Picture 1 (cartoon, one colour):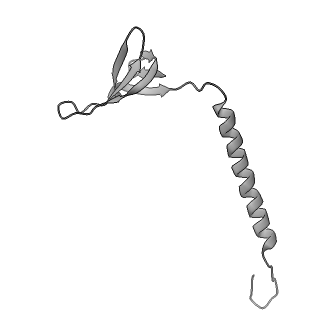
Picture 2: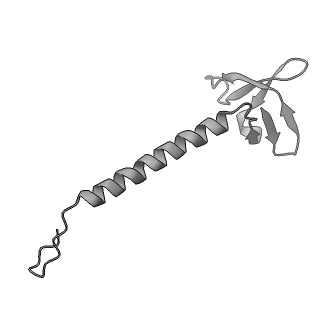
Picture 3: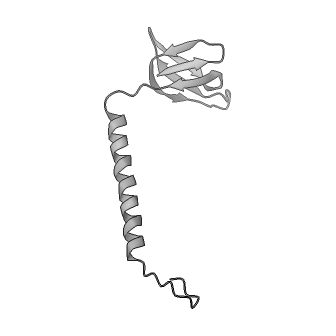
Length: 94
């Protein structure tokens, strides 16, 4: 994970979790496993986050999206083909 701050600095490390808020401190902190030790990063100071996607997760997600899209198109086409069209001039449209 890469965390950018408003002042241009950044921290690279592995996301470990979140702590806070507490009654004494309303701030929420991200726990980042950075070298040489984990760091607490105030959420209010974070400008943006970046997460590197490793492996083929993007490919699997794209394939699942493609299957869903094709299924919806097929259902729409079958539904339209199964409609009974009565286009007579007596005012009935279906």
